[in-house]
Image (cartoon, rainbow, N blue to C red; front, side, top):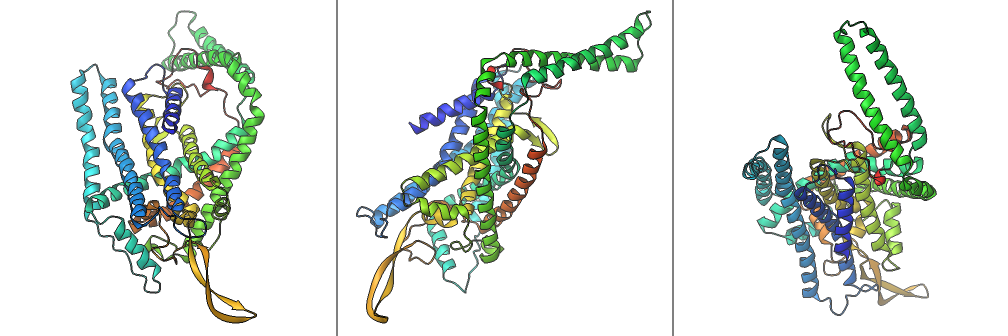
Amino acid sequence: MAAFAILAFCWIYVRKYQSQRESEVVSTITAIFSLAIALITSALLPVDIFLVSYMKNQNGTFKDWANANVSRQIEDTVLYGYYAFYSVILFCVFFWIPFVYFYYEEKDEDDTGKCTQVKMALKYTLGFVVICALLLLVGAFVPLNLPDNKNSTQWEKVKFLFEELGSSHGLAALSFSISSLTLLGMLAAIIYTAYGMSALPLNLIKGTRSAAYERLENTEDIEEVEQHIQTIKSKSKDGRPLPARDRRALKQLEERLRTLRKRERHLEFIENSWWTKFCGALRPLKIIWGIFFIFVALLFVISLFLSNLDKALHSAGIDSGFIIFGANLSNPLNMLLPLLQTVFPLDYILITIIIMYFIFTSMAGIRNIGIWFFWIRLYKIRRGRTRPQALLFLCMILLLIVLHTSYMIYSLAPQYVMYGSQNYFIESNMTFNGHRGNSTLSVPKRCDADAPEDQCTVTRTYLFLHKFWFFSAAYYFGNWAFLGVFVVGFIVSCCKGKKSVIERVDEDDSDLSDEEPSVYSV
């Protein structure tokens, strides 16, 4: 049922944004499948946390069925689930999505045959396959070079768990490749997710401009352009040819006039549509959602800042990937999750909401910014007018961001991601009438790095995230960049005015259709 709901959402999302003129079956199916893989993979983290927590009772004892063999089987199943989905992501990012993209690009070039398109697409895709092979090769033989913290036994314990995670070169190679993609996902999250977290709530609060007011402005612009055209044409009434400068100006004005008239038709259609009236009725609800999303964003940013500050002050340093054992500085999210653990399943619901919020703000950021190659804008993401290549880029970016989501959640609540709601027993001496007695009492304590290895099970997510310390160090600095981009994006979003009731209509839009827009384009 959940998988069906995810597929239904992906189909609606892709169909909502893809161009009605240039829809392609293969690219549509690829986009839907890739988006579904991204959403399903993001659900592995709460499942991992739930399974390690479910093996133990609240008093710190293991459940009757959770013996050593069963626990190990569950851990291996989760680990293999990660590698299965991550292998699919590798296949999509390094082969299938590039192949479909280049296949469609070859189709745009000329009317070549199908075989020629497939050959050319395979030739260009071969470069991505070579990159993937190099990453797998490097990952298979790169030494971990984990430092030895002589002042504490905690590091040796985690190092043992790293080695236990998978001594085979194949799993290390896959882990290195996924970590490399996660690094790209970190860059995408810094650019798109950080800005989307500020743009999405503020856009909901500010709303859009009035269609009637925009139509009035557009009518005035049309009249002004028509007057300029008539002024230029009046210079040639006596039969004299226009100068080259006037001809160029006339051509530009006529193109401008066509764009304004096209915009006039779109505005008239939207002003009279039932969807506009329905959205107007939902305006108070959008404001409420916008305020709620601002509070969620602030919770996210404050927690991330305190967590990163904790690593800066109390971690073992850059050589260990800024790993910390437990939380020395409490942050709001790390305090809230243990409280919610007392009422099942509120903590898992909150984690799921945070992950979904992270993904949807990433989508919002991609829509607002578009897809760029350095300073060159490649594609725009717009409702009903997005080209197939742009949809493929969008899905690839989301796949990369989802890989980085797990580390972001770990940064927000490190102890919770490591152990979930597990407890273990510690012995406490009992006192009688102020005198210390010989008897001891076992009391439950929340699992942390001081817990015995056989008493607390570390999530596979945590071990996977920190298999290579140099990636963890890069993620740490990436979190600071994420916070900086969020602050800048928030200031920019506050200064920007209301968005147009329709998507921007430009003369250079190659994917713009003369057909009436969908009523869902507001």
